[in-house]
Image (cartoon, rainbow over all chains, first blue to last red; front, side):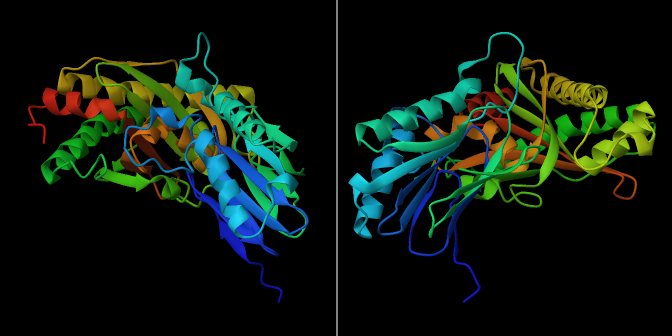
Length: 165
Length: 209
């Protein structure tokens, strides 16, 4: 089979994959693309995190994929259901940019990218999952693809070409 | 029950009119700048699920020129003026007289060109907001604009953060405009903060649902 199984992850969304295939999310600005990979079982997971903390949710039934503090445990649980082990998981982060530069003091919403990254790191630390690579910050958007066979994360940006971490 | 199911049909019509007033004036400003007629479509008011925001235009990775103004004042929100790279190049040729061969290929613009595009966006956003202010009697204070040449998904997602706390959708008031046969085409996106609707409705004499 040459056709690759591509699983899309939308904004404020997460998904998991067992074995071959690609997890993909596009247009990361201040959002963070967080991936987890169990190298032994070849189980991968990806979340497109929009906001740092679920405590601000006003809609009662928060979408757990949307917030860093809830997306990480949710993603871990979904991968464990497929047979992954938390001890073997390694994390990669991409995104968390500040898309627009403003002179003067930036309002708090303009700093959402760095805060998202910080909150993802904290959530991973709480579960003792190591971050093996990251490409975060800056002022540009990114699209990412995680290869289910290798755990390699391919990062594309508009002006900075392609890189692998 | 989401945040928007509370909107009645006539309230959406009012938001469409908000887009109409704002972009009508901005289109006139662009027409004066270019000294050419500018066409505008009836604005669309859409509740987009977050995951579909990236699929606007040619997909999330489509690179565009985006001028962003954070709007403070009585009814805060985010205003985007978005054009394709090709339209940006045409705009520079018509307006500033940069010759075609010097406006580069691909995604490369000089600092001067980027600055000119940002200023054009600034003028248009200013006229959008000033007519909206006149119409509603509300005070809109735009920030100094910021420009990005980047993926549409990355750019627009920045404008919907305020909706993250409210649910899974964001409300866009979108207007398409064009000049000539595809020479210059672009969009305005006005994304009022979730807390701003009540003020907009109140200012326009529309009962709250």
